[in-house]
Image: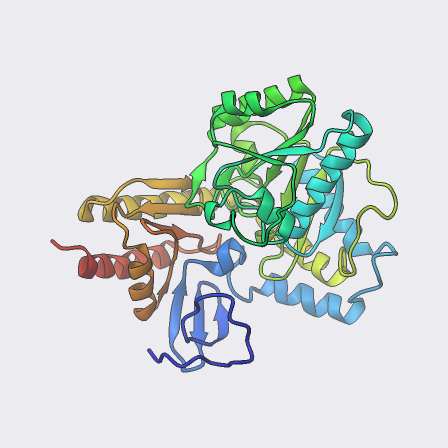
Length: 393
């Protein structure tokens, strides 16, 4: 593998390998040297249907010929169609379409603070979770619980109170007259795939209702089928006041959504907007993705594939003395039991496999939701060889 940086014109904001990808199909990527890679990252859980799937290509081509952007100052048919689909599937009522998860989460915080100003006696604080991740805008970095972000870009945006995940007593103790909402991910993906338990989510829903504060669920990574249900909150049988979506909603294109209960919606004209928000080209893709995920049997197959992947990872864990497999559906992590995750991911890449190392001791797996059993077996075979080379017998 060459160490040459492909282009000095690209701003250096991440440690990237010197590979230049030029093509993708399904679970596979091809670089500019013609080498193929099995992709179990898929843009960090973005490519719901894999790389360049026909439903998305067809939606782009058809909508591109009809209407690309008419300004968010006007309604368009795809904006309406996608909003209605999201309202129908979520059980919530109103939708603001955006471009990224951070933008949707910013909108959620603004909506909660607006609600607090109008209905909560001026409440504005948002309780979030330690090690949570909500995006890279200044406010969302402030909301996130990543310890190494604490000294960056000071002064931070005030009004975010952190508590441990799955500690209902800590949440209750943190709620006061300034609290507008509690915000969390059903599964903390960026932290290394740590789940909010069903019991915690149910208790949290009851607590927020009892205290008269909002519940915001950041489903940027868990939403649109990733866990084997359309939305992660369905596993605990709770419904949030506000939900955010992105990543899998666009299936590879920049698309996000702020989805809210009608009793929470209180924006006034001019409070929220964006040049590209609700543009028909991206909305048409979102419709195509939702229609595929909602087809009979699709989510059942995600759960089935998740079971296959879980079993393969547990087998590798037993063979090499690793730890637990965390997560659900096709958002999983393997605890390696030792701080070698970056080395494993790097060697796997050399051997044609993309996996993510969110923590020094863990690998994260986010394949396309239509990944095949054969592709899971291929991944496990490569990872087996990599672990065999890195973990002493």
